[in-house]
Image (cartoon, rainbow, N blue to C red; front, side, top):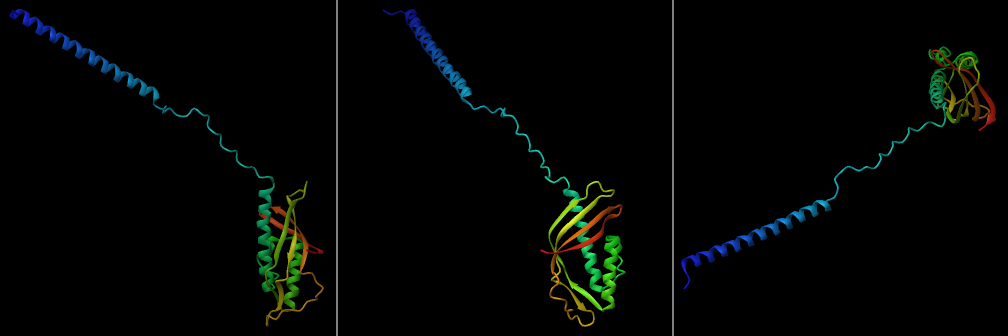
Length: 204
């Protein structure tokens, strides 16, 4: 016959077994979670910045022509020279205020002589000349910086007309309307000045 003490001992034994099983289960579960966490950390992609060396920036381009800036300056002055010349011829004014600011020497003298002849004949020149194949070079060892400008000058749309009637003046058919011209300019303290303009007598 089972005594009360025996029944009590069996009950305590069952409780100890249940507790031990629970501890084993919790330990196994904890170990599994810990292992999974470690595996996930090992598999996670790296978020550290790239260790590749930075690509150096490209070096600024250098102009192939070391005289490019000077040539651009000459071209600007030469364009202004022709703007003044065209304005003076449109009124046949040898005393045009801007002429002496862009030309000197034989270039100024010849221009003023031509304008005086036009005024005496009561003629003006209308329209615009055009320029092509312009080339600018610099004279070596000059006392002042000197530019030689050669180009093809087209005066076919720059025509002399009678001042009072605007009738076109008839000129010899043999004259060149497109010809090579060479201009010499010199850099003065106040800017570039045209010294000489020479018609080469060659068609272009």
